[in-house]
Length: 360
Ligand code: PMP
Image (tube, rainbow, N blue to C red; front, side):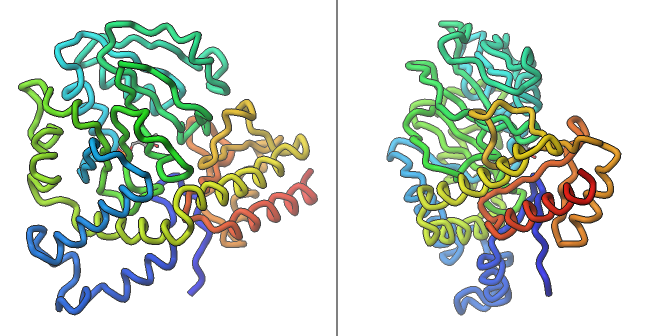
């Protein structure tokens, strides 16, 4: 069996060691005589799996004691709804930062529940840079400020964390969580769909400061209510048990990689190599200003877009797959999350060099 280097934006690659361990434990988890998929979520075995995953995540991210970790369903997209429902706390307005496609989706959903103040938008640079925090037009009465630290489609990433003081900072970290060290205490809430850097699709992680819990509007569906989910230890209903277990294996793998410091160094090196290749000639282009370039999602175009399909074919012949750019951007996009081995990036760079020699 040959595994491909899969550059998908999500669901994305999982570490091979994790897949192998899951395979070994598939039919009989630790002598229990059953697969994790078959266990009651309230049984002793599963409760230990769930608790260990949370403990490992808390350790890796140094999550302070006064934060709850919720293992939910519905994807990051459900959080676009849950956030205003839970966090408006009687206020009428919230601040949002628009840095691209995913910010826009969060904004559109929030508009159903409150007046949205777009405090800063990167639209004027066609989403190639981020305005300095000092220039943001914040509403002092905003219930919270929401932003997207990494835009998965545009490949635009914040190299700094906004310092919003008493206004809770809410971050959609779907495509950047666990990619580098982070000070969780700066955030009111962090959330992420699992299918990029955490585990399989079906699990959504919410890390929320306790004082923000318990303010949901009456109309909030129970499944989206942070207080209900928190009181029930994310088991108000049947949680996505297998995705939670597999994410726990990924957390253990991350610990072996040296935690966020260790993986952050590898990720920086991977991204640097790829951007260096893109910048080395006019044949490839990435439009994002250097300091805001994503470490995880690297979109690039070819000088001649008629070569796109040939590029994709040649890449696929070398086992480099899912490189086609998002339909709204065109060109290519290489998503190089934690589980993409450095050798995968090296193979892509080599392929790009050979392709340029042929067609440049
Ligand atoms: N936010 C960002 C930044 C994303 O990249 C994605 C998925 N690509 C989403 C939200 C939506 O996530 P989900 O599919 O889990 O709802």
